Image (cartoon, rainbow, N blue to C red; front, side):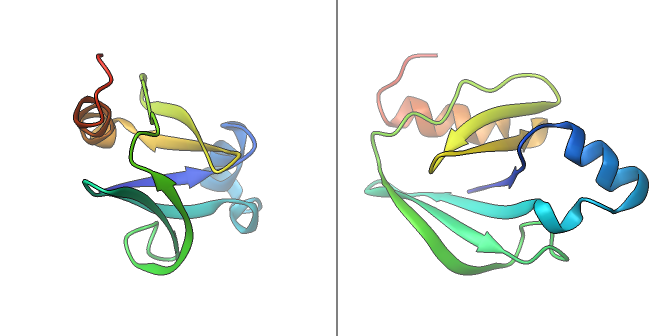
Length: 103
């Protein structure tokens, strides 16, 4: 399980951090990876992705999530650009390894 944030580009995070003006455009997601599927869950903005509220999509387990790198790694999920913080990169790599993708 890891948290991702959906935004058109990384600049939205900088503007949100400095002013809060773009917070309404950022979507906070919790991604749960099981042996059978990948679940993308919508979370509240105030929780920062930690409290899932509804199911957005279910992806096949063989979906490749990474590779991700840098402080905020970029990945595409359900047709949207998502950003994953470095602290979750190990979970993304483990999910890909478990699905049969070599690093």
